Image (cartoon, rainbow, N blue to C red; front, side, top):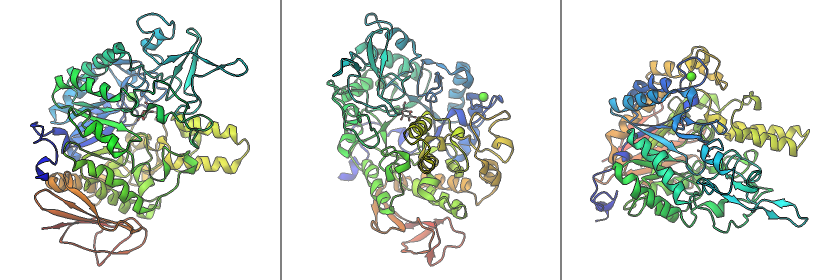
Length: 578
Ligand code: GLC
Ligand code: CA
């Protein structure tokens, strides 16, 4: 009986959701492909690569923000939901992209960034002028607190995710506004029905009417804040400020907000893919978004695995490695979503906010780069849920090298962090070296270097001067063109795995996950059980040493050319058991 309700579709008498058995590919427009030689990726660059994506086995494209924006946070600061950032192209290009995707039988989802706008959005431009008028309550304005010595203080102690206080003084209104992210990313006031209506219409309906198939939802669980705006606990990461986490995650209005979006907008457009960026939630809290009717979101990104070692939790120079058993346990949580009656999961290791997975979860030893990249591909493509690939992951792109410097970094969070530490530790070379190592190991810049298309100048990304430095390792085979030529490349291996995943979807996409060697620090062995009783056995050696191997059934795939009695360093195998 349990089986009947495994994916919820029977229970809710809905046709099966199309977004369950697809491969999604995230495009970060600035660094994907430049078409006009200005050094910045653009929409026509994306259009020129649609056949490439189709050929790889991609079904859905997720486009990171291409909206008009002053680019303080690379487009996650939107100044107009209904315009394209001019250097990326025009609305005609966008229409052509949507049509181009659909003509190839693929789908497209956009990024929905509605916790905040850019301070350049006209809503804020109006809002900051006066406490009266249509836009007065569009943002989180609060009166100052008066400190002991009569000075003006922010309403509470919250710190911003990108450093400094989360409050900024607005001269004209003589009030503070809240910005959980950058100063120029003011938080919208979701308590206002007017705000909600504007978001429904301009950020959502406008694009659904243009034919987009869903959204990746930025920071989907922080729109509703604690009405009392209590001070936050001062944590190592937030110090000297308070951590806003308690007061913003899963606030009192968050589920009504999502139910309203479902009812007033999503229901008009069938069954769109809505994948939420959901941080800091327990299993039970997550289920409220994806595990009950009416379903608020299709699935979420669960960061338990990608945060291992302390990423996004500790300051980068304190992030460390983690023992392999932690990874096996971390993966249990999202894999468990899949076998709940209504919920579903996503599978991912990379995005525009994370370091490259080969560097973070594989190895930095060039000798094992290829084996480890293939190993990670095997791990990802045998886990259940909707698979998300990030641009360049299919060729095993790596973090930036240690030989670069902070001047090569473009992301405001790397730069703010570097500046803060330099101020706190003047002339402390050793500390700044640690800080740099932290940036090289876990900053967002790692994911944002241009995609390496070929061995030509600038990796074939642009004929002009790239807006961000290209990783030089494109010259030694780490590029699409060279890898497409070889049957043994990381790219060819990914392509084969995506095919295998689709062919055995009841095992790899929908099957249940059972770890076999939880405490083993060297290998990760798990079984996937499909609902028809078919099973796969996956063994992955995450170390630079050989390891004994327990086999089951018939070998289907290995990343080693001659699999033997023992696993080679970073060797992985997939077996089918009948
Ligand atoms: C999300 C985005 C990140 C952005 C932040 C603020 O975490 O993924 O890139 O900086 O939201 O919008
Ligand atoms: Ca361009």
